[in-house]
Image 1: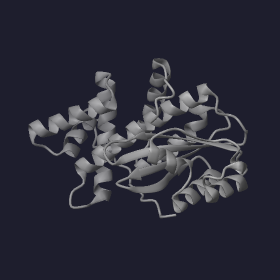
Image 2: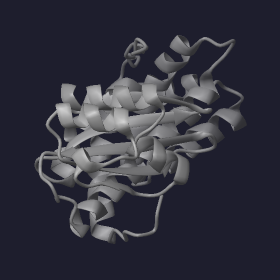
Image 3: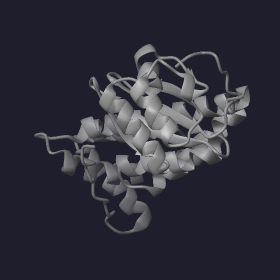
Length: 251
């Protein structure tokens, strides 16, 4: 992430709280990212269209989009391996795409964006742990919508999405056994619920809540999922339910 934009503490705190509520209300990584993309205009500015690209272990994929036009543009970009979002991930900087119809850097993506009716774009990336990063592809039908304040909000949004992705990846890696990703994601849903409980009880961040769970699991020699289930059951009075992980079909 570039250091061009310096979000203030209030902006960061508000984004963290609002995105945290999304985290606790959804059940899978795919759901998280779709919710984030849908909420982008509220956080970044009206008229903003948002796509989220995930880079994990050297592979890029469109993970979520706020609408069909954005999805088509991002699919073209990922397929071509060239565009503002890919460049932002490669160079870890904010990439501007003003006057898209004149942009000669990414021909395939430019043609898709112009067909979709977009006039300008911006891409911002943020790391999500070792070997992982996310990038926001922001589109607008206006020619020059990217004033400083909007880019600051976008930078905060990207950082918070990346933090959630890092947590999801850590939990998935913690619970994957014998390559059974589906079972791991079901376990993660229970762990997410427990993290929400611990955050509320201790007024701590999601990362701190996860460390509390992990430490309890280690010291008691009990599986992380079982510790999380006990936490949730202690509050709800019943065994927690889990959402189902739904792998996205390749575009």
